[in-house]
Image 1 (cartoon, rainbow, N blue to C red):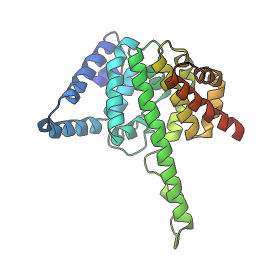
Image 2: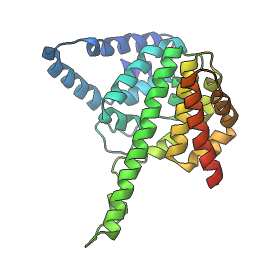
Image 3: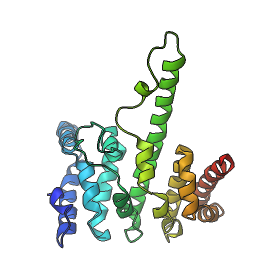
Length: 254
């Protein structure tokens, strides 16, 4: 059904919303007796490549029809590294559900971060993207340590390339999603929670890689996060200050 929704059409948004509600419903159930069935459901969703199918369908849906699907995406990606891998899969990663389709494309990112979406939907999208950026950073650090150990450790025989993670370039996927250009309207959003999470994403991306500095600068984000960093509400002020500090650090490096 979701594959049909991803092909667009007048009813595609309604179909996306209905299927997403049906898939999401079991995650609200409680009790130990449901745990085994829930694990089996997640395994089936993963094998079907649900995350990539959702991302394709979101790009064809109206902002109103995306909310439940983005909530479902956040629930899956924040809860399981397996679904996170599908989000950041480049189509060649060999993950289950690895069928040559990319995960987070620029079109999917723009749909998730569309300022016409509800504040709740935007916060969920920003949360899952912050989580993805942090995971990419952790994965890079682990890979770097493994490569260094292979090259410099006692009796080292393995090359740095063989120590690289086998499931694609997560940082590269985030770069190709062109996230900074989606964040300009969100850093001006009426809802403080949206602005705060957008600041956190800016800071997390800049901490992940210096390659994000130029897209962040070109999108005009530094003065926007600076304004958030002087806001009277402490949560927004902290998020803005974090983002500004990371941008400034990259500015000094460049």
